[in-house]
Length: 261
Image 1: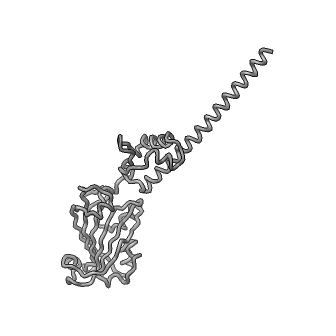
Image 2: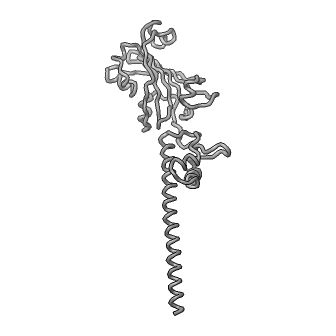
Image 3: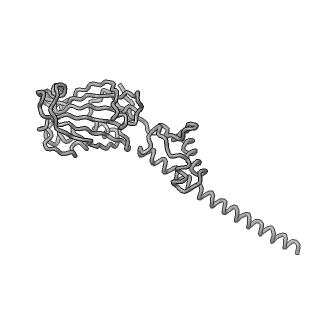
């Protein structure tokens, strides 16, 4: 009788403990699932460029509130990404994105058009046209295009993005007749390839490189510090008769490029 009671008590105790263990295991699985979900959310925002290198991310409290989880869960996700090298913390300041996205290796002497270069490297680029306008060529632009000062030209400003991050600001100047119609889609893709479809063959390009101190609009666009220096390239593209087709000023976000001689 005593043995049976002891056995029953043992079984009940075991079942109770197993129930507690099962609940703990279920909680752990749910906890880890939430941690993994937050990790994936942060990683996706790092990889697609929403979070840039050295950019401060949401705080633990903000993440916890956003995902309706405990602060401990949010902290675990952050610590996991810190251990993997994707994030780092500054005491008293917050959590920041490590330099995950490697810089684009770009050879200074490269004579290839930018669109062709990015294509050759399997780098996906989005072009956004900021504005276009007609204007009279000043003496400097006129000399580059080998036209008379005061000749009507077309000016285009566009930004090239990689993973939602601006990497290049570009100004293009060309004679109005060459445009063959005011079509913005031309400048959202490769200009050189468009010219080829119109029978305008590019023979060569002349490039000059120089350091460039950015104005406030570019500092804001590239999200760079006050004392940053950028690289500026002036390009004159010529046809098979050595007549300038267009002149462009290309300003690189040096935080996104590694320049090679």
